[in-house]
Image 1 (cartoon, rainbow, N blue to C red):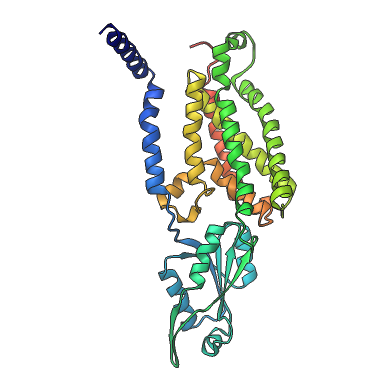
Image 2 (cartoon, one colour):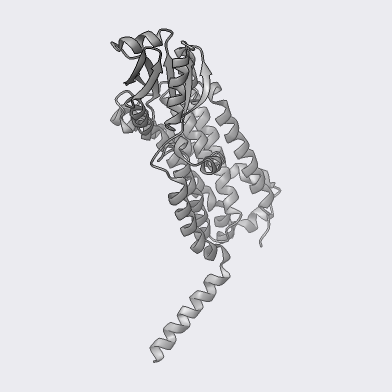
Length: 365
């Protein structure tokens, strides 16, 4: 009986301690809720509504019917119009579309003769999942009705860009730069301020004339160098072992990486201002990492997520960096062509750094 009483006392103590630790107690409930919502609602393996552009050079009733039938399949959503296949290729390089539909001027004659494909499907192969889904669209048979023409027809010839072999490593290795940087940068800096407090170094900082912003910037600069070293290691290993080339400018890639590293470090600093212990800081870093991993387009095609999940994903820095790194490395895009993602990272950095600076108080709590 005495043994049970002693264990009961320990159990009561642990429960009281957890109830006082609001952050840990909240994560006991928050992490399972976050995971079930992300996996149950946001993650959709039946990908539909890929962003597509159309170059209808025929502009006939039959070509318009094909476009309507393609949209009715719900595999793609027509979000852009172009005049030529070259314009669609430019949109694809900038990441504005993942599928392009080219309907040539002699479309009706091709349909009647059925000796060659009647239209062309341009596919962004940098994501093999998207390429496989687009191939499924190409294999569909559409009823094309016109005077003298009424037969089921497989109309599309497929051209796969950037990764015609559809190798998974080509998709995964560049995006891994962002995943690894997110995990390490946020984790490193999330414990930075807390570590100063636990080791007593915060008392020394109080006696110095250093300002909050100077302290924040001083803490992230060494980790920026570490982050750039990690980028170099991943690029070299990806090129040497997995034959993943860098088709765009290396300078553009490092500029985009520098901005993303700064954004991730500022997020870690902001999280550190909410934690009282290093363990709490690591918990918050994990909580921030999970949505970025699942909602950024790294594991699942971004276009296939529900609209709400996409809106949340666009608030996360990893989403925009994956668009930048795949654009530069795989599609050969210039950083200027990816400015919406660059601006989003810059705004995220300014907001999180401002919040971290305002929340930090150069004094002991």
